Length: 100
Image (cartoon, rainbow, N blue to C red; front, side, top):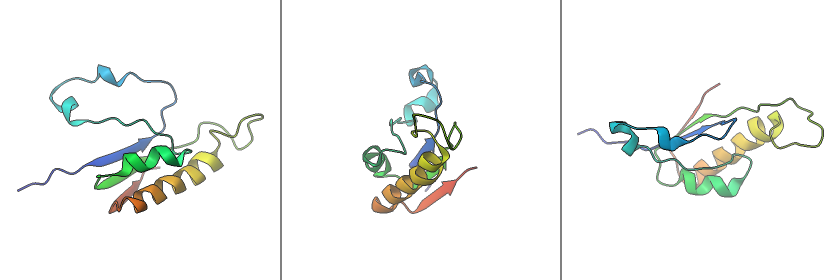
């Protein structure tokens, strides 16, 4: 018998999205959890009870944006992915897929 697996997809969303627009038979199988890879406390609950994490995050600004470090490659691509990996390891997630 096929076991349904639970996946966490960590992706960069540049602008606010309305996920309630998703419809159809498959929509009831999707559970959206808002998180931020730069904030560890949002990742631990998201990683609980999942079989795998799919990570496709990416910074949207350059290395040196005056006045803000929130969405730089260092904070998102390095520290954010590190945060996500640590949260997944803490939750004993068996697989992490990195998309580039």
